[in-house]
Length: 253
Image (tube, rainbow, N blue to C red; front, side):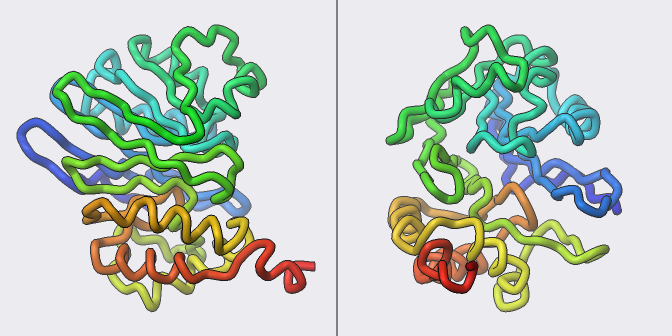
């Protein structure tokens, strides 16, 4: 199945792309989304993924921007589908800095990263990625959703919230789509994942309260489909009230 790279936002100076899917559907392999922000002459990669999808994602990115202009690589958390391609990306984007929770920096040598001069540890309370244009990408804590050290990213120009595993959907075989436009149907593909992978309603509510102060046109997760504005608003309300993880421990055990 083939999906083309599409812009979620585009103006003269700023673009936010959902990169295309070109991989075959393989049983037992987690489907992942990758995103690229271009602001002026700066590129920002969001969860560019593991070694399994590296060649595909590299080709998509190189079609859009000179790799030397990739200045920032943002990782939500430490899972291999997020970060196992880190050494490949660092070698191909020599001018980039890598942002990841300070909790996971000491694990990076296990992915082959020994020189930490280009690593920017993200503190628990989040922070900003400051771009040359003056735009600040907001790093928003999302701890325990599902990782203990987890962050999401808001682009105030594109009004896109990159949510990592929050908002993930698991597609049935040959059932993929890029944009979710019907919450009632799409939530069926999200519910099982969120009930099992999110820690508890208390942290769901904490994150929703944090992101609700932003104007959101799209929520862009690392798995599944990008949610349009209407679906995003309904998702946040649903997620804020979701019982999951330790709330439903007896069901799991």
